[in-house]
Length: 107
Image (cartoon, rainbow, N blue to C red; front, top):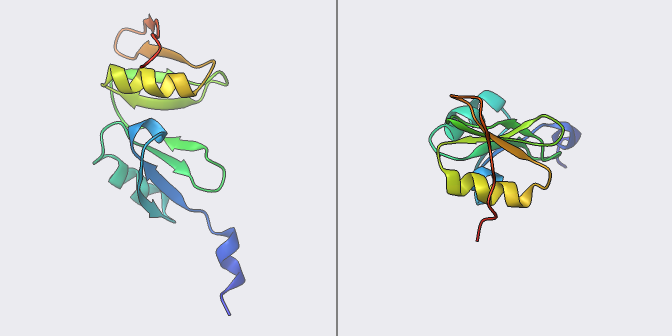
């Protein structure tokens, strides 16, 4: 019989393409998932149970949810537009200059 503590264990997953792509790694340790996520440009680390993004990678472009949480950091403008299309009400900005970006719908 499996241990009952498994249901309470947090799992973190690394998901490519700003959270819209394939899950490439899972771990119960957040820092390990963040380390692996750094190897996949444009990936995010999120809590598997809640779907909350806990790490958004690195890059000069940033997508922010309407609640203020950072959804994605990347250098890929096309990926940013794709993830923004899936997250209504999100805003984008250049982290280097602080300038807000106008998002064009991705095709």
